[in-house]
Amino acid sequence: MKKGIFLLILFQIVAMGGLIAQVTPAERLVAYKVAFLTRRLNLTVEESQRFWPVYNELQDQKNAIQRERASIFIKIAENKMNMSEKDIIEAGDRLISLDIQEANLSAEYHKRFKEILPPVKVIRLYQAENQYRNLLLNELRNAPGGLREEIKQRRDR
Image (cartoon, rainbow, N blue to C red; front, side, top):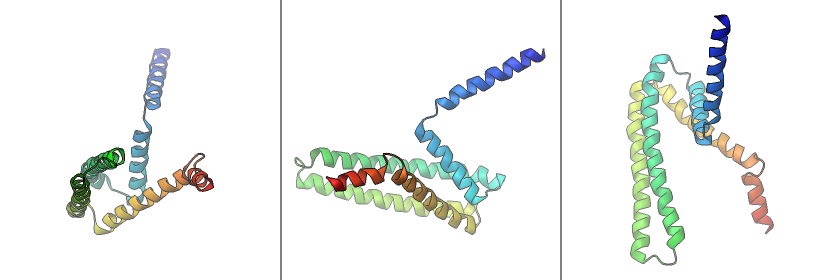
């Protein structure tokens, strides 16, 4: 009986290991960000239950804006020589529209966060997001084959 339970637990651990190995780099980054923000904000259980769904909504909407912005820049890069002045104006107007949309989202969700968290934790959230961004940028700069090396190679050309 004990041997059977041991084998069952061992099987579950191996199966979980397989799942962990299938986690994408993007999913690892999201998990790391959640852990980073959770530590910095020191959320209570109740705050956490109310905060994360709202925060994830905001991130989904910001990601959609980023994807659209990226597709506009890709279109411009691929077609810049063939774009009419009208196309260029429309692309610029859409980019500004996306910036305004993102600013409106920030204002809307700031109000929502204030309903969930005390003001000091809302400010900590903004600080923590900035710290997280800086941490990632430093990692990219200092990683082997990272931005620092790429910049140096471009400079040496």
